[in-house]
Structures are given as structure tokens and as C-alpha cells.
Length: 209
Image (tube, rainbow, N blue to C red):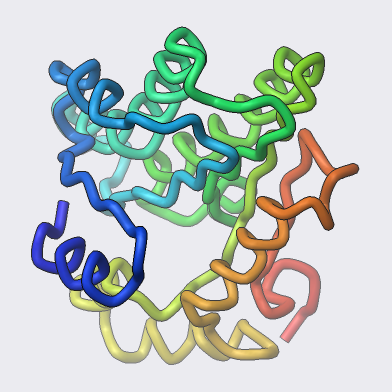
């Protein structure tokens, strides 16, 4: 959505083409697909929004808002790209999920549910697309220092943030940590990996700290 950032990347990276689109509105999704005038060898879906909400205060608008960006958008994009035959054989699709899909954090059930749905969907897509040798995997990061993390931090106490950081043996991750794993999954070096969720969380899930 950030046109300014896309323009700067166009200047910085030769051959880069940016297309601005707000995934919270899928009504004009066909126009986005039509703007993609190449055949794709790799796709990474990393769009995501989160808003903590206790179950008793659930409302359908918030549910639809988060689900549309986190889940519906990429499912429909992949479907339309396949229908238009814009995904090459031997390509790779990566969904950015979250360890939240497997953890019961209070107030986080909408976000967690959408990420769990991505994990399941990747397995089904991998099965359907294996005949074309198209691989589909998910990456499940823990807490990464990003704009999204900053938004969450603004809604909780400093004590809560400190307590959470202490649960990560290797500390919070960096965007490059997730990006590097994405590059691996897009490359031929991961040619025998599909229908898999890879956790990358500095030991948060498996080390009692």
C-alpha cells in the first residue's frame, strides 16, 4: 500500500516493479491480477494485521477485516493467478504464518485463526499443485521487530513487553531472518520441501526460558 516505498524501491533495485493495492478491499482484485504482466516463479504473502479482542467483544466487522487481509486475499490471489496461468511450473509459494497459530494468547483468536488457516491451506494447495511441481509452504515466525510489533506494543504495558522478550532465548527476530528463510524456500535449494510449516522464533516455542 505504501506508494512512496514502492517508488523508492523502483529506483534502488533495477528491474523492480511495484504495484500498490489495498488487500482489505478485494472487489477490484481482477484489476490487480491484470496488472501482473509476467509469469511468476515465486510468491510470498506477508501481509497481515492484528488487533487484540476478547471473545465477548467480538464483532463481525473486525472478524471480516482481519480475515480479509490475512487469509482471504492470498487465497483469492492464488486462485486467480492459477486461472490466468500466471504461475509457472516448478515455482514456489510461501505464506507468512505465525507461531500464534499454535498458541492460545488471550484476545488474539482472530489473528491466530487466520494464521492457522494459512497453515492448513498450504498443505491442500501443495497437494493440488504438486502435479505441476509447484511447492507451497508456510513460515511461522515468532515476534519480529517490525511496524506490526510496534503497533502491538502500543496497546500493552512495558512490563508485558519485557516479560514477552524474556521468553525468547535468542531475543526477538529481525525482518531479515524471515526474509532469508523465504529466499531459501523460493530457491531450488528447497526443491524437496512442500506442505511444510517452518517455525522460526529464536527458540520461543520449544525452549522453556
